Structures are given as structure tokens and as C-alpha cells.
Length: 162
Image 1 (cartoon, rainbow, N blue to C red):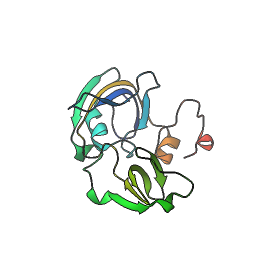
Image 2: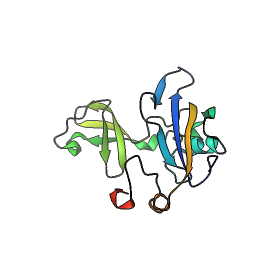
Image 3: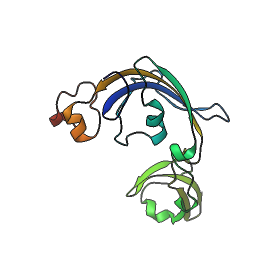
Image 4: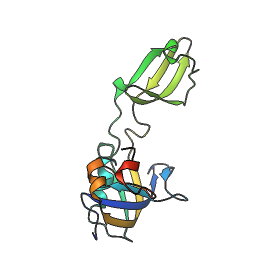
């Protein structure tokens, strides 16, 4: 497989920045490349779309509006809940915690009321990505069956936690 297309396994190095400030919000620099199964909703939609047709060694820079990234901010996703709902965990602003419906961020704590935000931290943000394609290969049958790429050292589907 010579190019990134649906059902390929792509490995990329990337840096994501916020265009207004230039702040880096995520990067694979100093780590292994990001490896993912293309077309299986593992990545934000625009990221995969912008890489379609890219070849090994190719570099691309692209800007994603919120609709193609983490979506718009949803005001209803900011809620106030009783502090007692946190049990033994003392909530503090800036914390990211997990609930039955997914991750959320603690915005503020005022007395017995905790304001939380279920929006992704990058919701509503325009994002810029600089990406280098490190490798592209055809997905193995077990990767297609499981819906994700298997990382280094995984030799068969039995070792995959799915």
C-alpha cells in the first residue's frame, strides 16, 4: 500500500498548535509515531481527511475548523453538580476526571457546588497540524476485525485487548 487510504495503517509524527497563540497542544516529538487504522473513527475527522492520498515521507500542514476537529462547544455540557457526587475525591479546578458518560473537566468549586465541563478541552478551537507520514501499510485481517491497528510487539489477536 503506497498511500494513506481507508483500511491502511498509517504511522505519523505530528505537532498540533493553536493558530492564534502558536501554543502546542499535542505532539509526538520525542515519542513513537502515532499509528492508527484509517477510516475507523480513531482520529478526529479532518485529520484523516487531510491525510488521504499522502505517501510515506510526505509532510502536510493543514488547519481544521472546530466542525472537523473536536466540534463546537456545547453550552449544555457545562453543568453544576453537588460536591457529594465526587465521594472521596476532592474536586479542584483544572482536574480531568472520568464519569459513566466520559471525561469531564472541573471548572470551579464554590461551596457544595462543582461546575464541570463535558466538552473536550479543544472543542470550539481551530487547530493547525503539521504531519509527517512515517509509514503506510496494509492492515492485517485481525486489525480490521478489531477496528484498530496493533502496536509493536503485538503478534496476534489473542494478545490484543481490543
